[in-house]
Image 1 (spheres, protein in one colour):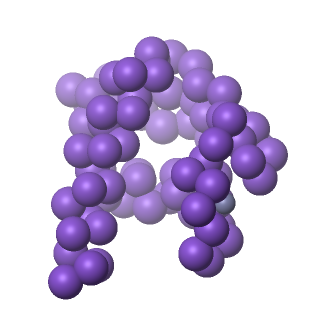
Image 2 (cartoon, rainbow, N blue to C red):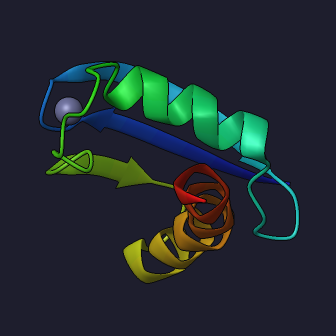
Image 3 (tube, rainbow, N blue to C red):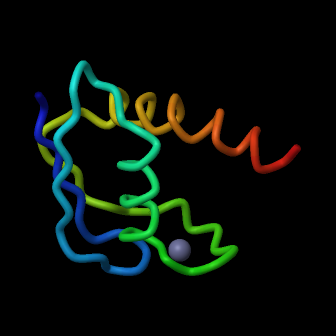
Length: 77
Ligand SMILES: [Zn+2]
């Protein structure tokens, strides 16, 4: 398990902690994170400028892409 903490960002969100297994984020975790970092409908901030602890940014971005991309594909169809 890897402990990841995010805070700050475009909307100055409070700290949120996630525990991920094998560097994989579940859809539920992503939704929770997305809502926490940006609960604004149709906002395009993409959680800009957040602080990240416990993981490097490249790995984290990849993890977010891996979970969010298939979800977006579903929504767009
Ligand atoms: Zn936003």
